[in-house]
Amino acid sequence: MSSITQRFTSTLQFRHVIFLAIAFRIALIIYADYHDKHSILKYTDVDYRVFSDASRSLLNANGDDAVAKGILGRVLPLGDPYTRATYRYTPLLAVMLLPNLWIHPAFGKLLFSIADVGIGLILRHITRRSSINVSSHTGGQPTSGLTQPEVAISLLWLLNPFTVNISTRGSAESLLGLMVIVVLAFALHRRWMACAAMLAFSAHWKIYPIIYISSILPFIGVEDDPKVDLCSDIHGLLQYWLRWCLNKKRLAFIAVFLGSFFLLLSLTYLFWGFPVLEHTYLYHVGRTDHRHNFSVYFYPLYLGLTSSIWSTNPQSRVLGLAAFFPQMVLSIYGGFLLARSLVLQNRSAITDTKKTSTITARSSMTEDQMKHLPFIFFVQTFIFVTLNKVCTSQYFMWYLWFLPLVIPHLSTSTKGGGVSMYKALLMIAVWVGAQALWLSQGYLLEFLGNNVFPQLWASGLIMLAANSWIVASLISSYRWDE
Image 1 (cartoon, rainbow, N blue to C red):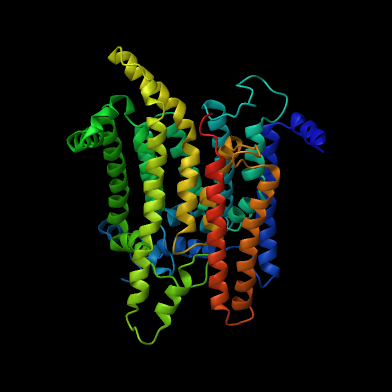
Image 2 (cartoon, rainbow, N blue to C red):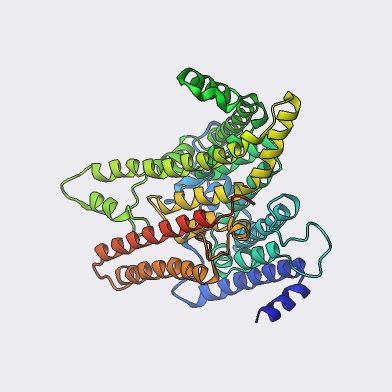
């Protein structure tokens, strides 16, 4: 079987994979149109109809309630996309999907699919141009078929039925994924200002990518950082961290990020007013969505919102805010610790004979350690999604697009906690099985009307345990010394 697979990948070129990926997505987009016309259970995601309705609202400026609330929006005039109930996204998404009304209703799906394929192309660019290639990569030499990284990109992303299904159903997550992968590419190439600007655009789209700042900052300006031996006492420790925080390159990165973010926010605010803040950001901070989802928080939130005792549901409001604490500590601080430990690794081996040589050595060391940044992003995102107070299958996309860069760096040795073929299959079975268990209870609740809320919540707890085991196994099997 392995010889057949090897023969197949040796004749297949990456351009063939791209062609298959595009054809796969176009076929499903066409099928979706047929399926939705002939079936009660729709293939198209309900959010896609929300997007299209929001775009339609942009063109409807009849009446005070329908007009955009911003100064420029009233002058033009523009419609308000937030008149569409449950539209909780940046207005730029509604603007991008206006061709749904002008060209074809499936335009957005095609756009999302193009972004999907674009992610695969940038992933390949990263593996070819950066130092994160696995040892089996040919190092840029001509090859007769797919390289190992290209096989990973093909199977885990471009031809993965799950990712294809999400984008062709009309989920906009692939647009966000394209932005995040571009952020990663800029970071790996140390183009910090471009990285900051793209990160700001990603955070405008959805706020969660700000967690990556904590893992990017330790790599910026490391050649100008003070020596660690300053931390011998409290005074030295304070002096060290003050100089670390006042690093000019880090300050420039933060300035570009904040400037770009508030520029986008200001422009959208001028057109659509306070609803931009309310629905794009504030809603998600205080969100108390009690609808059943994979999150372990859904049932306590549900109990708080349905209790007749608490008319103002303080239980849900307090829990909704408190849920951020473990999520942010583990994803943000954990990412910072992983990145900083890499920067400090082997620092004692750097010679201190000349300042110039020291700076060069530090910069070279950082270049070598940055190849692990995709895995740090993956771990941060996996933790963030697992502990989020609202979690659906679309959120899994947020960490899946890092997997093709992570898998080649996992140890396959059976000794020392490596991921052998058996363990890999077990991890996949546990991940899929935990979801299947939850979905079975969700079916009983959603379609049969059975009161299985406690069982559904218990299934969510099992998913939390399964995901915790998986991320711990991946961290322990990752080859940091490559």
